[in-house]
Amino acid sequence: MTAASGALDPCAPSAHPVNGLDDVVHQRVRLGILTIAHEARRVEFGYLRTQLELTGGNLSKHLSVLEEAGLIEIEKGYEGRRGRTWITLTAAGSTALADEIGRLKLLIARVETTDTAEGR
Amino acid sequence: MTADSLPASSDPRQLLSEVRALARRVRFDQRVTWVALLVLAAVTFVAIPIDWYSLRADCGSASAWVTDVNDGSGCHVRRAGAMFYWPLALLLAYTAIAVYAVRVARSRGLGVRVLPYVITGVALTVLFTVLWLLARLYLAGPAPTQPLPSWLMLLDRLVAPAGAIGVALLVLAWLERHVSLLVFTLGYLAVVLVPINVFWHPDWGYAGILGEFLPPQIVNGAVLLLGAVGFAVARRRHR
Image (cartoon, rainbow over all chains, first blue to last red; front, side, top):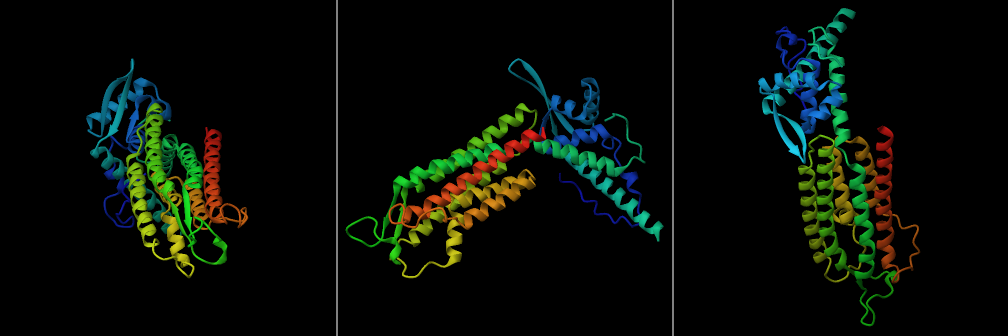
């Protein structure tokens, strides 16, 4: 997947990357939803439920949080008689995901830098 | 997997690992590699009889349309059937692959990045057809007395339909981030660019002319077919 590379210098004494984490995105299930939606462009509710091993109600709650934050769009429709719900990542969602991945990479870089310094 | 909020101290490595695993899973579910290879193999095999019956060679003789190609003189070879067949067949093949990919992904509950592949396939088909026609027009003059340079023969094979299939497969491998398909395609392109003629007697088929064209086509089709079988088996095992 494509995401921000975390161009900030991990050794720089700037604000800790943890401070920049978005509470909406920095959550295991919601990060998973954004990741799948990013890769798939468009994903159906049932696929998310299966892959993330969630109940329908639990998944709906997370989708509502992401929708309210403007990170995803939810489209309901029918295929034949069967109702289907499709989730699409918005531009803001794509940016938020890239930022989160960048922050995570930065965190890892920070931890590794600190470990190296302490090992000397 | 839990729905709990992540504490700031949670392991970012594990989180990234899970994100990558999910991304890989989605890509796997979107792929229709074996179907694409099967369609391209079918297109390649269907081309063989068309090429066989439509090929014409002029070796400078007024008495026959093909004579003594092995005496060192050059021949003009025209593959009119192939010229008409390949562009249409490739466009239909790419369309069929795209439609199938969309339908399969949709039935699995996913979207698919198919438009870049279709655009690439169509663009390559048009581009390579134009280059192929220009090459044929350029070579329509007096028969060369010397063998053509090897780089020109290599370029000729690359812009021919089999080469175009390989280049489009490279794009598909990149779009799907599919390393196995990339490796397979590089092998396929090696076979296309360095044709194998050891299984064919030099005198078979109109003084050897058809022998120059048929074995590579059979080998190319067989490689694509084997690739389709291989990717289908690998997919079944992965499930």
